[in-house]
Structures are given as C-alpha cells and as structure tokens.
Image 1 (cartoon, helix red, strand yellow):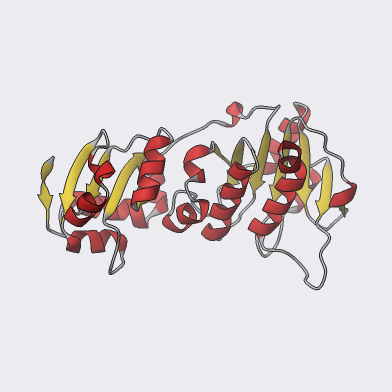
Image 2: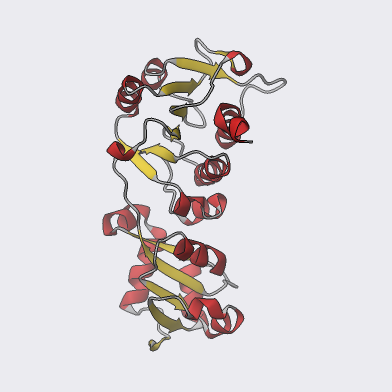
Length: 260
C-alpha cells in the first residue's frame, strides 16, 4: 500500500477531485470516480476494475472488503476525504475506474434499448438507467446534451445500473433511429404530436428502441419523425410526467411486462 496522503494539495488528490467535479474532463481522461463503499464494490463486481482506491482508516476498519480489491490502494486522511467528497461526514471510499466505451455498431437489433434526448437532470438520467436495468433493457443511448451518467448525482440515482448496462453516445439521434428502423427494430417516440394512447400500441417482442425527450421540451421534431410509432401515456390532472417516470412506465409496458 502506498504511503498515506494527508495533504489536500497533493497532485493525485487534485487530479481525482477534478475527475469528480468536471464530467467533460473525466470523459476526456477515460476515467470516473465512484464514491461510497457499495458503489465501489458494485463497480468492481460489474467488471469495471478500479485502477486506484482511496480510503480512510475508519473506512478500512468498517469495510475490510475495500482493502482486498485488486488494485492500487492508498490511505488518505479524513481532511483529504472531505475535500474529495465535498461533505462533512463522507464514507471515505473513492475508486478511480476506467470509463466503459461502446460503439453504436454494438447495438443488437434484436434487443430493447432506451434513448434519452437532451435529458439534462442527472437524477432523471440515473433513475432512467436504473429502470432500464430493472426491466431487462439491453442498453441506453444518450445524446451529447444529456447529463453525465457517471456523475455523482446520476450514479447515486442509478444505484449502480451505469456499471451494468452498455451506454452509447450519439450526436445524431434521428439518424440512429432511422438506421435502427431499417435493421428491423421497432422505433417508438414518447410525445404528444400524432400520438396514440399507449394502451393501443401493440408490441409483441423483438428489437425496440424507445425515445424519451428533454424535461421541458420533449423530443425534437426530427426525433419524433424518425420513429415509426408515437405513443403517449394517459394521465389525468397533470400536463406531463417527469422524464424518468415516463421512461419507467413505458419500459414496463414495452417489454418489462413481457419479461414478468
């Protein structure tokens, strides 16, 4: 084990703090940081082998499994832990992991996928990922304007689902939807314009991609037009649903129910 780090100005600590606080930097470096013992162990169990784990003496005593991880292990002071966490009483465990990368050509035309367009709230992105994993979806497509699924708030919301599902990035969701439709996948947009009641839509299995739009504006017209079907969830007393809630309802109906 490397000697303990006690300085908050240590270069490795400053680098790790930058990974934590700047999603664009983390993506450019191909690394992200997981906070907390459960998510650290979940990441390792999902195959995202940590490169380095930082932990305090208290954390090592409370969760000995952390010290058994097969990677570089560095002890840090409570003060350094607070700098990394930004909280007064953190768990004191931080794992630097390689960021997984998947190409759009790896999408299986026979699988079920969720696509999020410009969903900017990290809690919504995390919750949608969690539902996608729970309902047996094969992966999630994100546009460049979506919140970072490996950011701290999104990871807490996904409860480790970001480690278990392939995450794909696209600069052209309408083009991807048209290409996947040409490969035989059912393409479904959640929107109001030209929509049919969800209860009228028939999906009997096979490849599918479900597109959910931005919290305020919904899907772009281009994304809607690229889908073969447009559905809406029947609701009463409110104009719309939270993006993550809508995604969960639709994923349950479009596949989750068949699996259950």
